[in-house]
Amino acid sequence: MQNDTGRIHELDAVRGFALCGILVVNIWQITGMTAVRAPGEMVPLRHLLSVLFEGRFFPIFSFLFGLSFALFLDSAAQRTDHPKLVLIRRLIALGVLGLVHHQFQPGEALLPYAIVGLVILLPATSLPNWAVLALGLVGTVGVAVVLSGGFGLVPGLFLLGLATARYGIPHTLDTRGWQLAAVFALALPAAVVTAIWEYRTPYLDLLATSAPAVAGLLGALTYLTGLLLLLRTETGAILAEILEPMGRMALTNYICATALILLAEPRLTLAGSAEYGLLLALAAAIIAIQALVSWAWLKVFRYGPLEWLWRCITWWELVPARRVPEPARRW
Image (tube, rainbow, N blue to C red; front, side, top):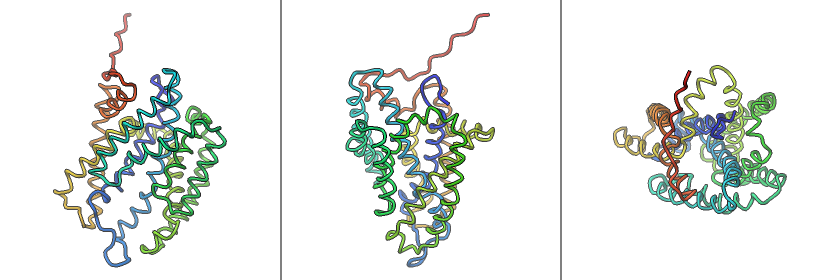
């Protein structure tokens, strides 16, 4: 469903959901927690969390970036005769922010996103829809099978997101319930089988196999379609009230999560430890804080703080940030 500001509620909720999953992986990456308790033997809880989280949420976030890129380009084309120049400025600003963020989180995604956006995604907007889709499929599936995934998946996922927007799918989600259900029904068993394959693969062999990448993509597809189906229910509507504000402030929440992790780590001493129960507690606390702050912030402002700054740089103008109160009704 699309609101009066042009935002699509479901996409904001999915983006917030992806942020929550990425957070779990980022905590152990930033703090340098140990993955093994003996040579070749993973910590059991870490092993389980890897299968549930690692490689599952990053593809969703990357796919949404490509999709949002296309939606923004369409919106920019209605405001200016040079929408691609606006997007170039937007991506450069993201890259600068990512470069700063990289100093605190070497595995961060913003800088690679900006580079891939400039080098691959922007030129791809001139290609026909079928070509974008074909390149996206080859770039995603091929990289997963041959190169075992990682950041190499980003170009393909960006292109898949671009193609999805080009074919008008985001604006017709309300009418695609049976299609989502069909994809979910096919993806779920495949995700379970490949997750078992990944789980049973010895730790030292994981880097030499495509199991994590293939299982991660199928898991991401299952999570994505499953959440979109859940959002259609009463329970999903409640969940959306939590996730949507977080998704609308995704950039701010992504950066601030790094700051919160770095502030908490010296007190929790996660570095080198295998305290993954403590990791989950920290993730839950950060999510709760960000959900509350995002909800409260967006009651007053139209954008998150970093989203507002990014928008100002994108359009090279001071964008109004505060919400305009609705005029009182006269009876």
